[in-house]
Image 1 (cartoon, rainbow, N blue to C red):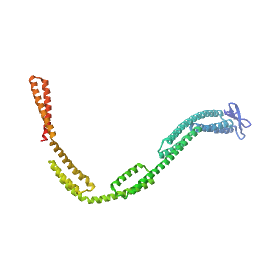
Image 2 (image 1 turned 90 degrees about the vertical axis):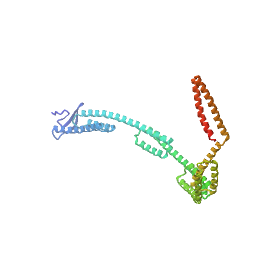
Image 3 (image 1 turned 30 degrees about the horizontal axis):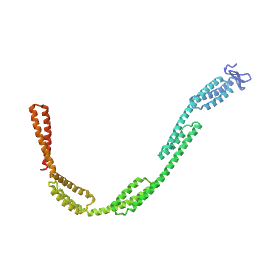
Image 4 (image 1 turned 45 degrees about the vertical axis):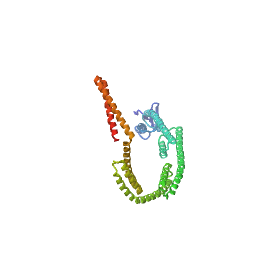
Length: 409
């Protein structure tokens, strides 16, 4: 009689497994002892238990997909139900039931994580679309804007997928933004090309005028025209690089031709005027001796004679002209100031006014002195103080008036 709690071998060799529902035949054994038969079918059970244990390890220790785990559980349930094995099959079913609950929980967790990932992905893609639409509507930095749109497409591809309807709607908006940006950029550069063509025409006119003046010998007027043409060139804007370089080369060549010719003529003229500069240096040194002016009339006569000789000498080189002319003007200013001072001293009306001021102040002082004496004699302190202050002020004014009068003597 077998003592195995999970199975037995009948006399005819039939092997049974004991379950909660009763015994079930799982095979037959004709080649040996009943213990060998049970050992064989126990090994079959151990193999099945090993598969359940492996699944438990994968479910608990890895990121096995819930659908794959559930499919494996179904197969193992069928295997346990039809198992040709001896052992605690009910325990295996219970373990599979526990795994079913665990996988269901895992499925909910995966679903929640997937929903969160999709929500995050939706937020990312909405941000991508919003930025793309802003670039399409606002930016005029075409190179950086185009590069950023390409980066946004790569960010879109790297983000998780979301539900098909929302994904398609957002992608449609992203595509529309890229198309709108491309159209705006194309229109801008088309307008820029048209604008540059207008600038090119304007600069061709400037260059033609500059080239027509290159041989001019009207140095002053032509130099002024070239300055005006340069201002027109700067304010016209830029043509295409190729046209700009070619036209600027022609404009500069014409300008250089004129100014080099003018410089050569001026250099030759300045060389011929060097002797005049030396003569005016001598005259300036002679004029310096007029200073300081002690006799305005004599100084003016000497300067007048010197000026006649100065004009007779003629022009000097440009780099010396300002210094020489400035030196002579300084001496002329000193003589003129001396003449003005002399006229002021000899002006009879001004002298009479100065004398009258002195006389009035002296009379006022005399009256105040009498008033002070009376106040002191009467002991009127306030009147004494007022008289003394008035006398001090008028005596100060009298000193200034007498100095002014002395200038006329």
